[in-house]
Image (cartoon, rainbow, N blue to C red; front, side, top):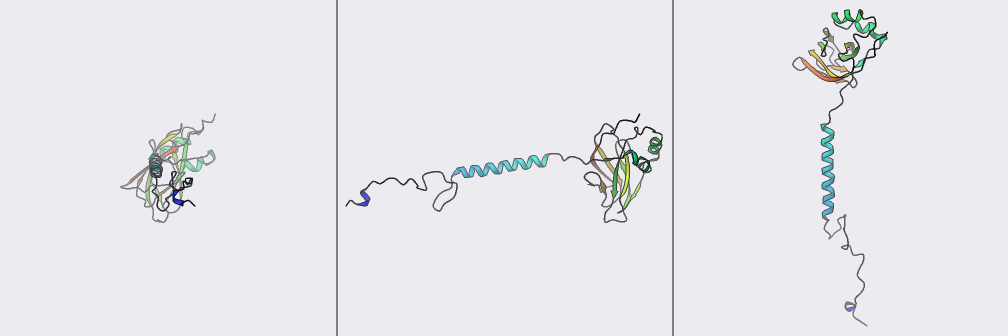
Length: 187
């Protein structure tokens, strides 16, 4: 009977060291490819995170005043804008949007004025009770502009879509907004 050590047997085809291994088994070393895969995943995640955080957010939108609401909306405009709006029989020289302003949790509120590139509102005493305020659209063709608030009103929230917290710091706060396209004039 031959000695077992002298017999050349078939090599063990299922030897755990015969191919790449992605799982760390006892007694084996992880392959560099696992480290490369992990580094690639981390790099891809970092680049994706950077891209998503550096993109500018879409500014909120100012809602349009419907033609049925114009008589009520006019009462919140400045004296000059009221005159212009009342003399506009076709309702197209002063296209309007509106905001809703309040100071939730602050019943005392404060006095503020709202401003766009072409309009400044009269002063409003804003409290925790929401107020609807008309704002003439400075861009009837639509576009992105600024809405500013001047004055003092702690915790001021302005109802845009989505709402914007605009607490005046040192008397002023500004946010970018989208002014919607105004409908054409009535004939």
